[in-house]
Length: 116
Length: 116
DNA sequence: CAATACACTTACTTAAATGTAAGTATGCCA
DNA sequence: TGGCATACTTACATTTAAGTAAGTGTATTG
Image 1 (tube, rainbow over the protein chains, first blue to last red):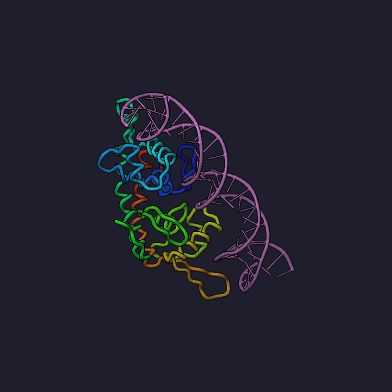
Image 2: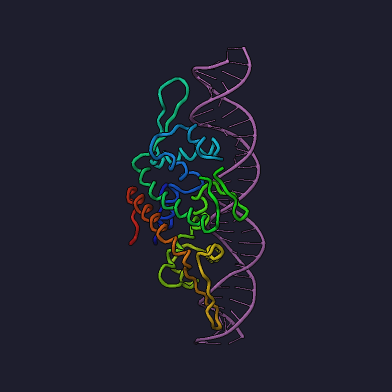
């Protein structure tokens, strides 16, 4: 049977497994922003329109749990937390790029404008 | 605002738009099987473990509506229907391949065996 | 001393995706 | 004539993802 259990869940395909890591509304947009420099919670919030505190926190936690993102509490009095990609997280970037380009292509076919 | 309406729905990113076309549990596995030759409903059902009639029908309908799949009723008495990729559908294949390879990579890291 | 910034958490609700089970029309085959 | 195959549809239940609203603790700023 082409299927497997992992972490109390049954997967049918490698695709499903991949999307468990980077799928959903917010994970890819978050990972995408973490290319290059580490970003603070508040910076991610500013950069990703519509995301709520709760979604940003929960998605970052899941990405951390899966080892794609690293969380670093900066020293100091006021809370300051930085998020960055791990090596594992970096391997997702070309995948995201492929999907994003595909999405842009579909948008173009539909005549959808994207504010650049 | 980097966002747009399409078909009564609000999208925030091209990624979301792309996954509306090929996302979910079944769409990519279906599209993947339609590479090469056209496949009959019953062939797809046999090839895709765990998929139900209802899921296969609904996902094929959505893919048809979005123009990725073509549905052809074969002449004859008994119902015989063939599904194949449109040109638009074919552009999804390299994207799926990328995601699938990424999924295999993640599985390997986790030591998950895949019956080949 | 009150207001604000930051990075969260909690409880609850809504919406979307998926699954279960059964039924349908047509015609063929034994 | 009864059972089976094909390609569906329908009604319903469950599961998962996402959203809403409010609150928390610490510390700085005016």
